[in-house]
Length: 460
Ligand code: UD1
Ligand code: MG
Picture 1: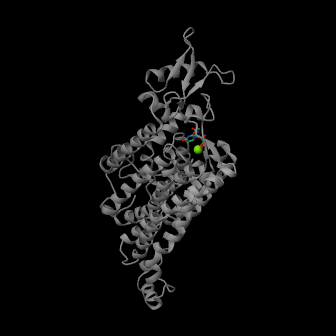
Picture 2: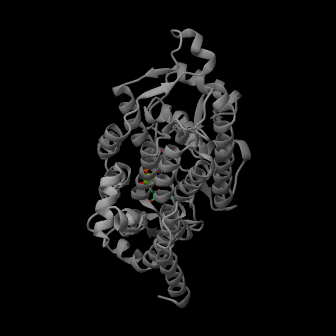
Picture 3: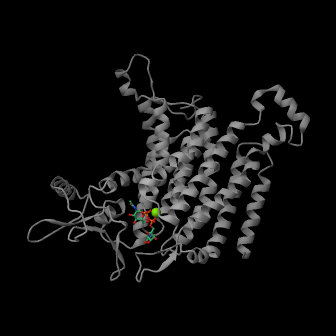
């Protein structure tokens, strides 16, 4: 390890050590910062050390958007994910130390602990919080396992699509036991449609289906908004920052239970940012490593976990607006109404070094031809500037259309761009939409629903 790395490690250990001073609310946050730094240092140290080993076992990919398509190690996101899991194991005693010292019989202050438990049930060790935390780690381990399997064997979409929902079962059980709320608020302007006094709709088990869908959507949607250097990890960092901003708003001005759930979210997000920033250092244009599907699933699942266990899964979806758009926009290709090539990433032009929209080419004999109603829809989308078409000059027949991804659409709108600029535009867009969503969530949201859990004692 170099001197700067050792100094950073010293700072991280000091931050963690001094976090035990008082038992206030800032204490787990301070420990989270320290562990985040350790996550950053270990990921930053391990990636260059392990890269050649990944290539040796065949985990590499061609950087398709560079001259000569260099081969670089793939799936280094698994190093970030593993660092995160290890850091989160070491974090456990620091998260619960105040209860271990004063509230249990095994924490070194036996008599005091026993008295407090007798005096008040509220002082009991928070098994519910530990269960939530452990279920999160369990869920992430299954997700990382799925990601590594996918990077090794390139599992088919139809086989891997639903697996995140199975990984999320421990979370849903904890949600059921600890929280169990399965109703949604009715917007004020719709209340007249419902019986007098009804302000919520009970969804019952459908709410669990909805949460499973969140667990499926978050990992997969990050994985399909991909293909330019730095985008997978960059978008994950932006989403994590947006979650953090929203959490901090609740921490400063939220009601008690909401503050607790958002504190849980912060404790998971801050170390996530540490490992992700180290990964971004190597994945940013021009990439030295690829993150692999492992990272996309892992990052998406971290967000699903904080959304579900932090009880803000609906707000979370506001931070996924570009991914939701990309998913809906991709649907014609995902369901194969329009041919979907193995790679839909933009096309690199070695002559000017810029990225252009990649196209489906119907002049190739292997490409499935379009049905007439789809051709007409494409014409309409082209008028709306939602797709780029190329036509046969003589017959006017569509011979090419741009692939249906947000990345290609940005190129249709902005014209050809260098790869890093393209990534920056998408990340900027994600951040602006997210900040706007937070603003709407805390201004128009309470006005529409007549309710916000900032400064209030009830929980959603
Ligand atoms: C998803 C997308 C696919 C896109 C791919 C890019 C869907 C349905 N699937 O597939 O269209 O092409 O991600 O990750 O939308 N690569 C680069 N530069 C990068 C990142 C990736 O050239 O910055 C290439 C490399 O060859 C790398 C490969 O993409 O080896 C990784 O693809 P993979 O993550 O396995 O693709 P999918 O997630 O299956
Ligand atoms: Mg991928």
